[in-house]
Length: 550
Image (tube, rainbow, N blue to C red; front, top):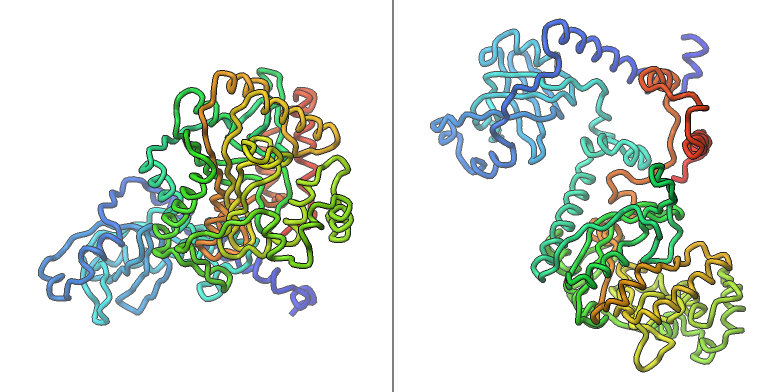
């Protein structure tokens, strides 16, 4: 053994093994190309494994033999066993798995030799009949066999699987092939999204689509992504929320609307945040925030039941009961309940609040009022303790620029946020429909932005004009789909419920970079518009071998 071999790391050895396997599979592919069409597309799949099990899974061996049920199936080969003159393969399609039984007597020597040369991961089509093996397994007795797609890269070890969390996120396609838990998690997500739409439509809401590119970002306090539209020569913003467009539609006469789509916020990445995420926002006329609280509670309860089969879920070892009425507290009540070291007098004392927040490591700007200080203390002391579903109601005006003020206390708004397991899951309120009050709120937000608040809203003159035509009494709500799916699937991070979460880019191998530049050459720098030059440099700067946040 050479010194280099002795010093070789396990990772390097694994990479060498993988490269050797890839080389062998490429050689097989080259042979297929010599013999004809390497990637055929003329097979007609007539049957799905899940459907076959549902229809014939209870039939006895004798009944199957008598019926001689002919099938045409195809899927990815996950397991192969060759035992002399007989072989078995476990094959998966999107409905489930089934076993192929292959013998040279049934398919011929040439096809049997082809089968023995197949690799795990190959897409294999078969025609044959259903039967039950001696062990009772419903299987396909293969009469014709075809390789539809050659898998070049080897699948991860079937026993170890794909366990590296970062690899699962970067290579979701591999994760979904190998990990049943991941497939089930996303199946639950798809069921949940479908259930949301059914519930909304059953309550006479119409689904709409509003712009992703906005001339003015609005609808939430958040830092937007900025891009440039070359033809119009204007900056635009990826939307942070669809709220202002949806309320324009309510003004126009669509009195119950919802949108289930993506939002974008140029903020940090952690276990609960991703720069692009999915929400549903919905608005109904002649509802108050109290009506929205009841509706939101019923919606989440329905979605949980449809997606998981139960209104009681277990998350990170804690039982979350969605079947019971959700609790309701004001921010002050929540602080007094979960942080009893404070008094009501403390929460009215601005100097005390500023000093206490500084002690907790959350100092606030000098220009914020006592309402914002109370909410900051709530976030530091009580929010994480709201494990069971809890509505926090009645928020200060200064942090709720789009919510209707209370008729009994003009310093407070008719607003709620829903917390489950210490996480904000929904946000809603009676909508502010007074255009003059909304104008003053926008001006206050613009002033906050001038004082350095990157998340403050812009002044949206067109939205004010829409309100001047008349917005009926309306209540709205937004729900974070990703966070709720985390609860439904017992996912510890938001990345686990996103098919393709945002991650720091990794450098391609030099060979791949060289090939890509040959195929897609960049124009000379002098021919790039200035905005394109800047974006290109930004990309290059960001694509360095810096540590991943994960």
